[in-house]
Image 1 (tube, rainbow, N blue to C red):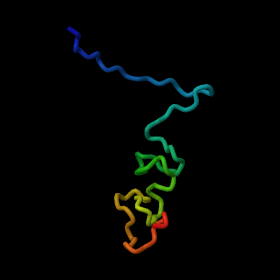
Image 2 (cartoon, rainbow, N blue to C red; image 1 turned 30 degrees about the horizontal axis):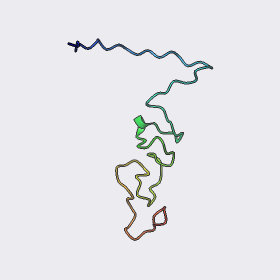
Image 3 (cartoon, rainbow, N blue to C red; image 1 turned 180 degrees about the horizontal axis):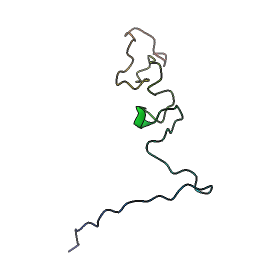
Image 4 (spheres, one colour; image 1 turned 180 degrees about the vertical axis):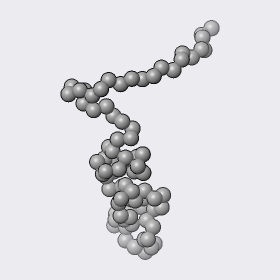
Length: 83
């Protein structure tokens, strides 16, 4: 019979960055370079055009990270993708 006991969780300690290793990835870093971190409301940190300071564009995307998509656009407006 195999044992089912779990080991105690251990704290993970990362070494400081060096010239060889570069910076250590931080979950709250600004990965897309738009000036906003996810902890500051950036809802898509892989797209620099999507952040809390962006203007809303009629493109079926929440560009300004306010949980509303295409607010201020009417249904007949042309979208950014040409549709």
